[in-house]
Length: 100
Image (cartoon, rainbow, N blue to C red):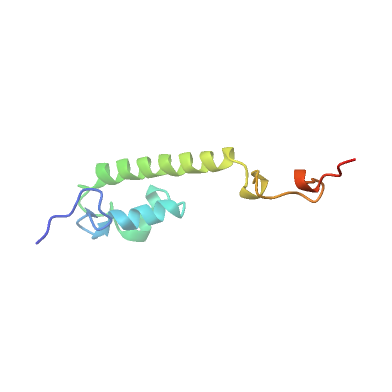
């Protein structure tokens, strides 16, 4: 059997419920917190051996999601960004300027 690469979406994070890293990542992207992930997946409800690993993974993923949202809030919307190939109706290109 091939070994899984660490951080693989198929890595089983909770052997009691079979919850994978990929499922946890998807649920965090949907805005689920640790309690909601546990209720949805069954993780953290068995032996408790996954508690630290899943808790740390969720903290890291939530931090990354916040960074992504902060970066998106700092950049202007695409429609507001200047495009040198576009001329607004109020602008005249140099080759259309009146020579007078």
